[in-house]
Length: 569
Image 1 (cartoon, rainbow, N blue to C red):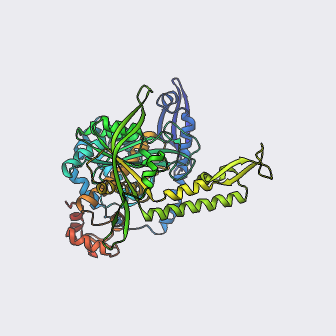
Image 2 (image 1 turned 90 degrees about the horizontal axis):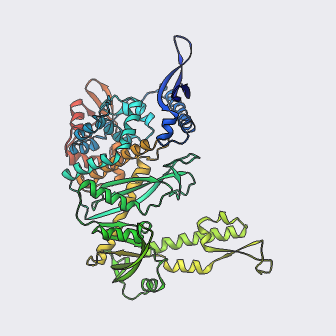
Image 3 (image 1 turned 120 degrees about the horizontal axis):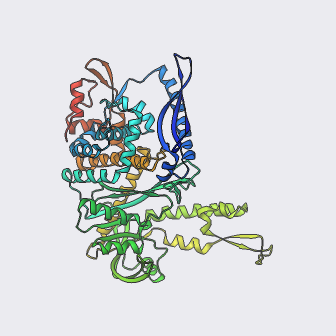
């Protein structure tokens, strides 16, 4: 089986279709059939695809690669097909069912005429992403059949559904927020925000996948994703944006949309890392009667402010129960200047009263010093072997490049590389120091510190997306389909977080919960008789005691399995 692009010259222009070639057993020869109608070239150009033929040729190449991979896997499966059935997703199903989103999703799809229920497709893809993240093709043919419940979805239905969900992803998130807020009230008095990006192994950029600063330091086209959490670390907003755009305005867009869609009128304290800290974001927060709590680079502070941070006076020690130093902390309240650019491009400078909290963390200091020394050693090694300037990378900040003769005199031509010891000493001096700035004058310094450090939860959410859910959409090409794919990943994270924080009261770490969802499997022996092949663990025993379910039993019947799938927290 192979796919190719068929170009038909009709009266209205060139019409494109993806055709599938296959062996016809009756005719005993290769035959062809239409796999997917794409449309007229001009219509596709008008829809935003500059070169439809090149674009879909690339799509077909990926489809053929995936088809070849599945064919090879099927050869292995013919030797011994796995009889296992996934059942651990019942934890997520209980949360999903309790939100009662199906009616709203059914109303949404009523205008489309789909021959499947959008809510069931969304469930199936979300559970599949949690138990075995893979391509949509493999999900359809390998993962869905192994879920205990039968969804009966075709590959084309999955593609159509994902594209539709991508076009409507903001509405769908709004529906989930509305229902989550009823069952598990959201707390938007504080919101946590951060951005990450996902790369695509393609050469050409398009209107969405653009080359930009990648978190993995790659040079492939990327897309950016902004994620917003409430005060209890529950996801409440997601925004996708082209990879070449700055992440700084995204926090403004996503909070504005969140408040408008969910009729949130109260004050929100926006918490974010130094990458989001800019005058425009601070001014925007205050204009919307919100607050802010941002990290600020000590290195980029004016000398007077930097001197205050490094001055040992005023710091108090914070220790653990054994008396071990955790960090030093001090605070001040003053007016500070901020320069921002308005909608008309005019610059304004304002003075804002804010609290600033300086901290020194000895463990962070050791880590930073180790990283600096590693970069210095790399710079010395590259200097010794006379490497090119482009090869220095991040460690180039610890060298200076100039032109000199053998005696060291400056001349045009030969480049001389010198280790910048002043830059090294400055960074070593600042290692371990951090500065937090906030509009919340009355908030205690220790509370400011602990609130800011809850940002690690959003980093963990990104880790869940990237590692556990394998969110990078390798084979998707259309912008709407990419949006739909990330919506599924977002919903999986949302259900896992609700389970972890709201239902299980943060008793168990994310890794153990996901590990159970993936490994809790059964094998059917005969009618109404199954065996539980999941390895025993302290987590499973603890969960069994808490839920009063027979998840530690070796033998299970259909009644017990349905009890799990219909379980209500």
